[in-house]
Every structure is written in C-alpha cells, then in structure tokens.
Image (cartoon, rainbow, N blue to C red):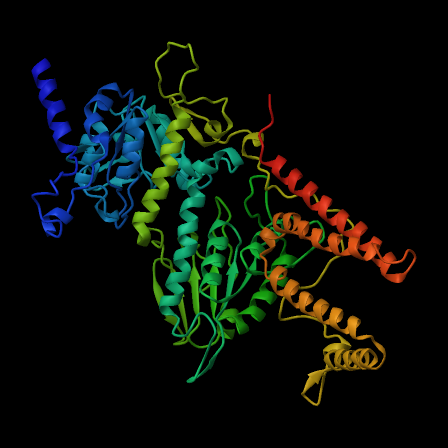
Length: 603
C-alpha cells in the first residue's frame, strides 16, 4: 500500500510541470523552441489525492434529464473549490459537454467521472445530489429522479414549490424519505445574495433577450448620423424591473437604445433610472405592486385597465418590447394584448421572457419564434438561458459552491467534532429553501423567513390618484408652444432676456466685471456637462466628495474679504466663504455617514 501511494504521488508531481530552463550560452535565444515555455500547472494537481482522501462529503452531479438542457450544476472550477473545501464531486461522463466543459477538465479538478446517471445516484459515497431543472423522469433509466435518490440523502434543485407541479414533487420527496432543498425558494435577503440562483439565471435571460431582439431587428439599435442618412435610435420598452428587466435595460442602454421601463413596484424606479432607463409610472390609492417577499402581486381591475392603455400608447412608439413580469405560483399576467401588437411598427420585435408560464403577450407561442401579420416578430423561446450555457452553468455553480459552504459550516475553534452536512432549520436561509427534511414536509416556511427589505411600505389612504405619467402623455405648457414652427415661446423669452441682459452689461459694466462674467459662464457650462451627465446611482457619493472642490471658492472669497470693510466685494466674499464652508464640511459629513453604512457593527 505504501509503494502504491508513493507511485501515485510521483505521478501527480510529474503532471505538475515546471518551465524548461535553457543555458543562454549554448542555446539560440531566437529559437522557437526556446521561446515556447510550458506554463506552470497549479500545485493543486499534486494535492488531489490527499484532498480526496480527506474529503468529508461527496456531491453527485448527473446530466440534466430535460431534453435540450445544456447547463450543468457544477463546473470544473467549482469542483476544484469544493475539493479544497473538503467536498468531493462525482459527475456523469459528458455532463458538462453542452457548456464546453470536458471530462478532462473535471478530472484535472479532482472530480470522479462515472459512466451514467444511475451510477451517480447509486454511488454509496454520494451524500448530496445537485441539479438545475426540476426533478422529472430520466429517459436513460426510465425512473423519476426523486425515486433514484436513496433514502436519507439530499437533493438540491429547482422545485417550484408554489406551483401545483412543485407541490407534487414535495409530496413525492416526502414519501421517498429524502431531504429536498429548493434553490428557487431561497429567501431574497442580503445575506443570501451569493446563493440566489433566480437572480443569477434571470440576469442572463435579460441580457440574452436584448441580444435576441438585436439579432432579429433589422435596424440600428443606436442612433446613427452618416452620409447615407440619419437613423433614430431604437426605442425599447422593458416590462418588469426585476433582475431580468434591469439586465435587459443595462444591455439595451449600452447598445445605445432609448430605454423605457415599467413595473408595478414603485420602489424599482430608482433602480431603473440608475441603469439609464426612463421609468413609466401609474400611481393609485392604496395599491401595492409587491408582496413581503419582494415579488410582484396581482393588481386591481382599474389599475390593469390603465396599464393596458399605457402599453397601447407605448407600442406605437417602441420598436422592441421585452416582457419579464411573473407572479410566483401563477400563470404570467397578460400585459401586451393583440391591439397593442397591432399598433407596433413593421419590423418590431417582442421578446417574452415569461413564455414558460404562458407569456405576458397575448399572442406568444411558448417555445416558438414566429412573425405575426408579417410585421412583428414574437420570440417565445424558453431556452434563452441555455443559449449561454457556459455563463449560466458557471454562475449557478458559484451559487451552489456558496450554498455548500453554508450547509457545511466549519466547527468553531477548539471543537473536535468532524465537519458535516447540517440542514440547520434555525438558519433563515436554510429554513426558507428546505421544503422536505427527513421525509417531513416543511413548506411553506414562516412569514418572517421570507419577508425581505424589498417589501413595500403601506401607502396613506388619502393618496391622490394620478393619471399616466409617461413620455407620450404630458400637458403642454404655454412656453412649449411653437411660433411659426421656428422655436418655442420659452426659447424666445430666454433669447429676449439674454439680449437685454448683455445689452445692459455692454453699456454700463466695467471691463473687470465683463471678464469675470465670462469666467462664470464658462464655469457654468463646464459644471453642467460634468455633473449633469452623472448617473443617478453615483450622484450622492460623487457629489458628497466632489463638493469639497468648493474650497477653491473659499480661497477666492478670502481674497475678496481683504477689500475695504463694508464694500460690496467684502460682503460677497464673506458670504462666499460661509456658504462654501457649509458645502465642504457637509460633503465630508455625508461621505462619512455613507461609509458607516458599509461597516459592520461591533458586537
């Protein structure tokens, strides 16, 4: 046994190659053989055997049973991290092929390759099975995946516990006597952000929706002015400002589109604006668009009617509509009706990310892409995430790696108990996602577990009902009316006032005042273009620090205070020093308070 162990260690060391060293006196430096130097392989390669022997837990990963699914639950890089953390990975052969992860990459990460799914589920060493899609019949074995899990083991995957299909899976898992953890039931709280697979996968769907729309849309997404003509930027409407919606807004804005967004949860307005989008608002008395878990809720009939009216108006202007609205456990709400689609221009595109649950568009055909009335392309694909299988697998795998760290906490210092899998029901995150434990159904969790900071605050009963606030409906003021189709009344008034002011300056002002006025105007233009273009999300922290530049104003004011006491310049100088000092010290005070928000409180 000792000899075999020594031979295995020698083989592992030989795999970890060092760069070849050449004698500069005897070898031509320009030789291609000298220029090529073998890269240093991670020293981890030589520790694989030792880490495998020290592992306290084994995770099994089989190829996804759902047809056409290219994602894999654990990627090689995550398998390496898990092994370093004491968790070994058994994976089915070619399980990662759809995402570009070969068996060789898994072997180099210390994972063990098993021939088929049944071998993964039956392996005695496997304690936990991790997968992505909901458990279903495995065509390879002819068995349901829950039935393939041995009694007492743990299955981690999407479950959909709020749906009827999810409830069936929960009952089936309870009858099988296993532990079932639903990754789509992880509470959406700050501490669980690194585990939130819904957010990581939805982000990919939102990004990909813009890519799919751009692929079909036969015009520029950004505005172009060329010798061949002027082309306006594409207007994109995003319905639903969750993770997928915000990802779509960011991707579309980066491509140069004009982006508008709508969500029933008014608390998402600032998030939309921070991504560069324009938020459309419908405000009603005592209407809450989100529940205590941070998800959208069903709205009133009156609100729904106003919403449809707004979508019909927006459809006339927007060339691309991306819908992401969903209500957990219910069919997707119908938001884009046939009359709205009829209002869209020829060549427009609709991408329905909610097509898996029926779709937000009345004309969506789940799983299909087709052209409606030879004018509008409606994309109802349900595999947008799978079309970025490498990225989706990597992000899901990172979530699972973080989850295993939570489920297998390190014992406190001085404790001699071995590390193990611990489904701690006192932990809010674990309690929220555990739907079956040791054959006992634990769903749904207590309300205090699922409650998030995103829960909307109660609105006052006397809140004023407002009409639609959108770019398509605004009351025109008197100053916005145009005169002879040349300019507006407001522009004419501004021009007249400017001419009058500069006329007075030209006749009566001293040459020194004129030069200072010129500096003031130039600084005003500079400040406008420097500060006004800052994204709203960065405005507060940026301004709280950059306002310290008001120190320059203080220096100028101090120079002016040296003039005769009581003079206009002396008074203005004192005022400038006072006001600028407030700005300086206030800016630092705001910055300090914001920094305190990111510091952990000492126990």
